[in-house]
Length: 123
Image (cartoon, rainbow, N blue to C red; front, side):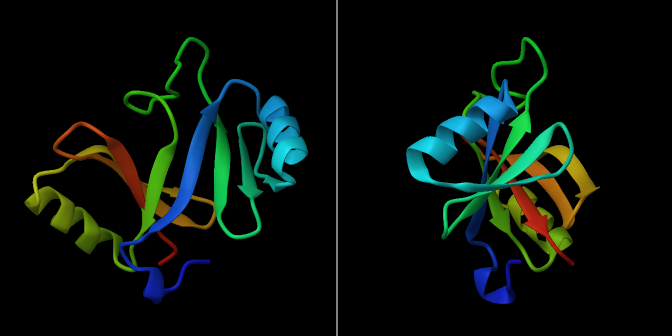
């Protein structure tokens, strides 16, 4: 779990994938990553230093709901509401309101250039 020393730092990277088992086989074989399943639509990975996840994307959605596709960079915040307030004051916009997931809560935001990122907290 992230600690307060990680406040406002990149903490997690999430890949939107079409087939979790295929991604698990590829990254396990190519890099020796380990995995933990959280149901049929989500699998966490660890490269030994950083954790991240494979999120099963909806059919026909190449970005899995992430603007522009690609990985979703997730930052940690000890105070989720404060992080949201700071993002909005700095010119970002909330694109997915805060929601609960196993381990905490998170929301997604768009920066001024349109990049979608997320912020999570275990509080």
